[in-house]
Length: 358
Image (cartoon, rainbow, N blue to C red):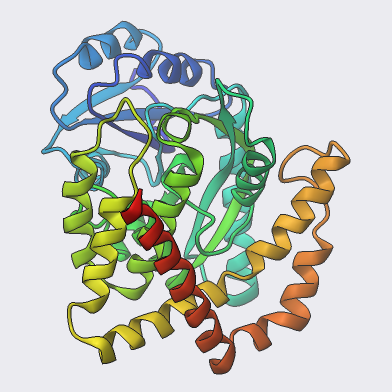
């Protein structure tokens, strides 16, 4: 008698994940109320990643596919080898503690798709989970509360691959899959395409993920670099990423992230076509920041909710609502974009000169 066909394909890109993968596979083995398969899309592991997966084949349906390294390339290969009509792209260091997380998410995803179809005929839906960071250090409590709360939203620059991407195969194919041109930012670029062509929803439940990178590199340094990357990605300046990749590879991974090389690259790339073009880029950057001014209002909500001991992502957001209703149009106007661009120039070159001096 043949096994029932899976309704979900969980695609996990792997590259030397022997430390993280056992936890995820154990969590997936405990999922109930859903039939799914696991596709491990390996980019050339030389540790025990693949042999570890064999230990779970008696309780999980696992398929291993291989491709060149690069998370986007690996996940695309995994999607091509999957058999279900719905796909969940999940990072190997994810942790799932709720046994019905996938079941509840699938029910919510199907309900949201049906509701959207009835309301506007659009079935281009993609889902993501909220995050909880697993931490070894106790500093930056307010910052982590803010970042965790933000993952529950469906706004630009609030959704990344750590949260899991749940999407139908039909819509994923229509989006032409993940961008393989860079070894990173594939999640941000797909998220941006979904904002343009469809709708994001927050799925019920929480995925836990390690904060190790933030703690090792420094939360402030990593977030500044992330803001550069998101800005350049939004402006379509892909040449920044080629230079930034070389700078990142040269970093000592055992120490804090050094921002000076990335500041130099940003300065050079902005000026590469002359001052007139540079001023245009700064104006566009001002527009990008103005469009994200809602995060300041949301941070005020998070501060208030945290003081009341409300779990991240659960509290009311009156400041955010006030921003959306009364301030967003004003802040996004051309004069405010120009002012924001000017303030960004002052901030950037203050940071640039300070880091150069240090």
